[in-house]
Amino acid sequence: MKLPDAWRKGVVAVVGLGKSGVAATRLLVREGVRVYASDSTDHPYAGAAAESLRALPGVDVDLGRHDLAKIRAAAGVVVSPGVPPDAPPLAAARDAGIEIVSELDLGFRAIAAAGETHCIAITGTNGKTTTTPETSAVPSPTSRSRSPPIGIAGSVSRCRHFSCTTARTSRLKSAF
Image 1: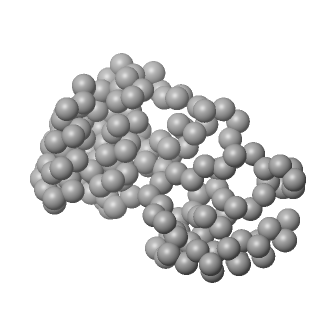
Image 2: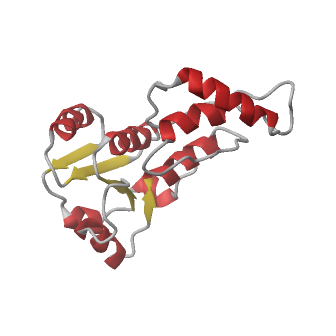
């Protein structure tokens, strides 16, 4: 994966340890990056996640707080979508001139490193679980008869409205 050289030589801070923050930490570790991961809360998911992350080599974890000194010294910061832009750890990173990227950006870097890939990002408050499988079923505009393999990444659960999804997908396919 293409990461800044400084990230490979230093420590990257991951701010927010929900499911995507944990996944970002694991991805960085897999790439040989040392990580300082923190979350301002100590909710049950973060506690269980923290234990699994502490077992990984090169990972330092804080729950219930962010060590702003570690964040100011980081080579980069990966931020979870649930962290407000004016949160103290992000303000500390900005004041120190540290690059801040979203988990989504980190994910796109990983996808791009896998080769020539086209991505569709589906975001928002409602409808992602239904829209994502529909979109993945649409054939490639460059090859109507044989589409390249399509992968779905992210926190997508099984669609609860499969029959509805099948009908909508048929209409989407006819649009190409």
